Amino acid sequence: MPAFQRMMLWKHTDFEDFAMPRSLKFWLVLVAVGGLLVWGGWRLLAADDPRSLQPPTATAQVGTIEDLVSALGSLQPLNYVDVGTQVSGQLKEILVELGDNVRQGQLLARIDPSLYQARVGADEAQLLALGAQVSERRAQLALAEQQLVRQRELLAARATSRDAYDSAAANVKIVAAQLEALKAQIQQVEANLEGNIANLSYTSVYAPMAGTVVSITARQGQTLVASQQAPVILQIADLDTMTVRTQVSEADITRLRVGMPAYFTTLGNPDRRRTGTLRQILPTPELVNNVVLYDALFDGSNPERDLLPKMTAQVFFVIASAEKAVLVPAAALRRGSGPDGARNRNLVMVAGPNGIEERTVEVGVVTRAQAEIVSGLAAGERVVLPLAGAPQPGPQPRQRMPRI
Image 1 (cartoon, rainbow, N blue to C red):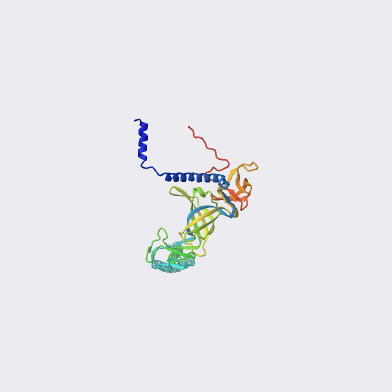
Image 2 (image 1 turned 90 degrees about the vertical axis):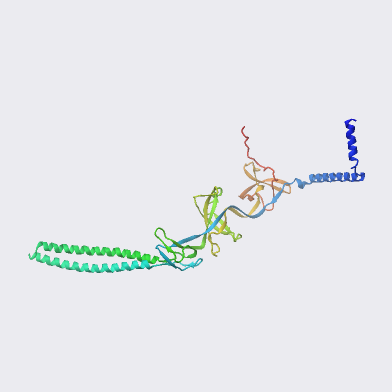
């Protein structure tokens, strides 16, 4: 039997058992044809609908725009001082606690004054002894001068020898020199006494400025050694003005200028803006995870004392801003030649009742999302946006062909 006949016989025998009823076949064909007709009609209607050919648009609105540089920072007091001690000794008493508000000159702590009181007492006793020696030398000087006068009279009457006269004159000079030496010793002891009195006064630690006690690093009973540097007992800070210390990347630091406005928010109160002015940009960078960062400082007032040291701040430096400005999406801007032929103009496509027209506009503040239109467009007009994935109109940069 030929191969073609065997194939036909196989098809006939295999599918004969699975043959569908004619009515079911009819309905399947009818549903398929109807679906094709519906799909084709929808495609024709969509092609005829003019709205399907229109590009997306956006309405120019009035609002506020800000070109910002954001960074993270931390808070620290603008004015603070580490209160230490200039003398060594045991810390006998701390008279303040954390969070206390202190005034300038208030007594904060005491150090054991026994050693320094003893030194002051010794200097005062030595001064008394030297004063007695001075009185003695003055009496000796007076006696020596009287003896010299008598020797001079006797020598004139040739009743004494020249040697006795010379001895009397030398004795006057010796006693006078001893008296001057005692006076010098008194000055030295007085200087030592002034130093010991000062050290005795340093055993009472007073507040050098008014503020709030923000830290206490020493403990009562601790022995403080001030041989090389002054040990810190506590820290006082003026919390009325806080400094925000931010780290700005090298890509944004060139956009910052001293005197520009800035504001920040905290994690605990993200809806409240606190304003300030950029005071300083430190020139020394810091490398963090291979990223170069520069410190920028600005100050903010803290009248309510709700800002505390070490708080984290979200900082925004205002490069440019505009209020009550006509705003459009930044994607609506195009670069090209205006109607007058001038090149590198800012253009927008405006959708009006007579169709879409190209219009030259003057642009102000521009961010990644929005652009300020200074002139050339009014609020309420609709601008055309580019289609997703479509190339931007206007001049395109040339692409170099790779070298083979």
